[in-house]
Image 1 (cartoon, rainbow, N blue to C red):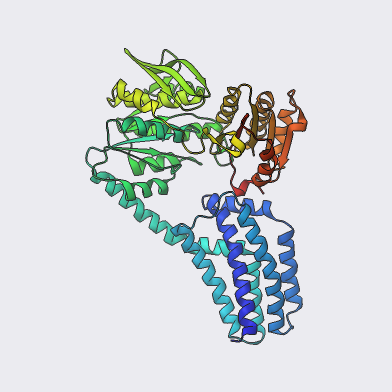
Image 2 (image 1 turned 90 degrees about the vertical axis):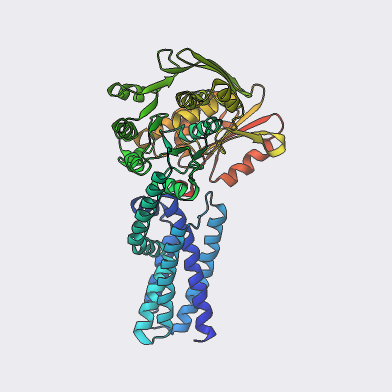
Length: 523
């Protein structure tokens, strides 16, 4: 093998790997669902895809060209593709995380590509050119290579998941007197989980699923790596994108108690209807009821209240007729002050968390804590020590001394509106919102973003929308208010948005980051 063939081949292989990074990144952000990845692929079809096709056609036309010359031409074009891939990687919002699963698939895809080039280098004539053409096709159309890696490793990944799940169930059973509490909901579940963990930790040894680990494998990973014989309570956050997801996690964790924080139009692209969402969330109630457990339901949510008539849950909210309810709620930029009543008990609380909706999240956690025998004093202390979950109405200093309210992980309609309401409590300050809007709301997506635009137009001084296509419904909502449209900006990326608002920030400015869509939604 000569340097004339080796160096161009290495360049083309690097091009292939660089392009693969982007495709596995999108596949990961779509939870490894092939259909969702293909949907992104169709949207992402662009001039680069056309240029790749032209290159392949050129290769076919030059089929009689000398092998080395053809390889060098392709290598030069590959350098351009490597530069493009690097640029995409730099501007990506959520980078590819090289989990063991990604490494397995990436390695498989890479092995296929390298094998084709190696074989082509040590063959002659037409076979050599055919193998080279196939290798170049995969290098310049990495989606095929990505899918090959996924499909080839799929059986192995399924067997591995089955083993991990079996091991997690075994470990759960091995911990004596363990109480499992499951939390689900369209929104509010992560915040409620952190609040409940903090309160119960005053009395018990508690383990919770970290961050937004709410898939079967995320929960299994937590159990296998962090559950100990000393654990008394395990809090599992349960997410769902299709019917049966909650039931599947319940079979793994076997919860005794369940909490449903809310039900609303989330993931309608996969659920299709709100009724399917309601039925899926209530899979938790069905499971707990069959196992003589108890479910704590947010009665302030109309969907939950109506469905709960067929069950015997513990209801919490702001209605004095509920089993546990919050009253005398007041909030400002310094947090929330309110009381929670349950029977003859009345607990006075103060929290530094922002937003009236957090009073409801705290109420959910307190309702469960009271049921598990945590004292009023311990509850009050724990609530006073609560700090915001990262990227969920998290207030911190920012550029030029301004205040940043980081709500980047909030992706539900009601929560977004509440976040904008929080801005209104900063009287006398310049209010800026930066948002790409809401997704996965099906035919309600336009309406929800339109409403968000109206709310922002009423409260904010400057509005910066990220993503030109997704900005349309929000901008239309803004224009129905008295908002000065000269202060309405549309950026093609978050990096561009930063360049817009940075010069505007000072000590008298509060800026809200509302939602932070991953790359697969910003095509």
